[in-house]
Image 1 (cartoon, rainbow, N blue to C red):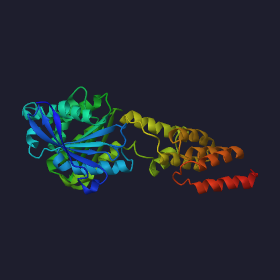
Image 2: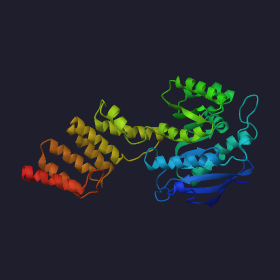
Image 3: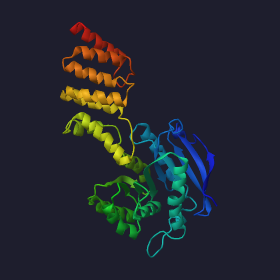
Image 4: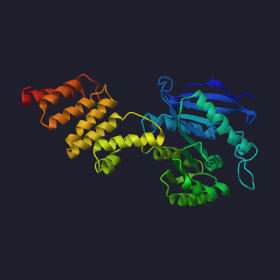
Length: 383
């Protein structure tokens, strides 16, 4: 039996995902000798942006975890706090215990559990990669038993996932014994998140608190570890609060420059403000294997820093970079005009303001503002 998808696309299924496209598919699996239900949410602009590739968020327990994960991914990507991503959920409502079965002696996947392990890595992921434009960055999410199960991929020599969101994980002893060793020695970048709750099941809360303390001590530049103890969170209620926290943590570098970053990092940077901006996007590319244009909002934040610190010479490089990234926006010409204006070259500034007027408005920069700048230069310098 050849592995394939039966397409049962149902776009716009959920009201909260009005602009996203949700599809239901049936996967005929050779490994499992059965059909499995898969839910897939496409990014909002997936069909119109045909050259773009997207990270994958794979959701175990998709029968109840898919919707909260998909909703948060859609929301955070809309505000550019995470990259647009494809979300796939595996329905396990009737097979969860079999899917996560492990040997009582060595506590490794066995029988149906071993088949499900191979199904994800050997059938589902290749099929998703074949049918959708996926980047190399992949996250997996699970809850208690499935959270433990997904950690078995970390025991492999080359883990197939980059990020692991563990929601109140019910770790087996083999994972408890090996997880810190594996993460300490990892040469691959790994994002690892654990959530427990103050009102979680007592046994899980204690075990997860111990694991958090152990992982916090790891000194490995390739490990990005995060954890939360959700105040008042029960074993089930913590899920809804932990998912957005995990997204915020894993994609902290990706999101636009925040007011906190501006005050604590941008204004105190040792290099130039423009170097800070370029380095931020180089890090995004290196960490998440994504290449995105520098956001206009981040350009404007750097402009604010230049104005605040009166480092007007830096406008020259900022303007050149802005013209390269956003050639149809007025920001590049405006920055160069500010450079010439503050360096006593009104004719050059006048030319750049006129150039900006013919381009697209951005942020608080408008055509009316450019006219005011042009008229001001004419009045003061008789241009």
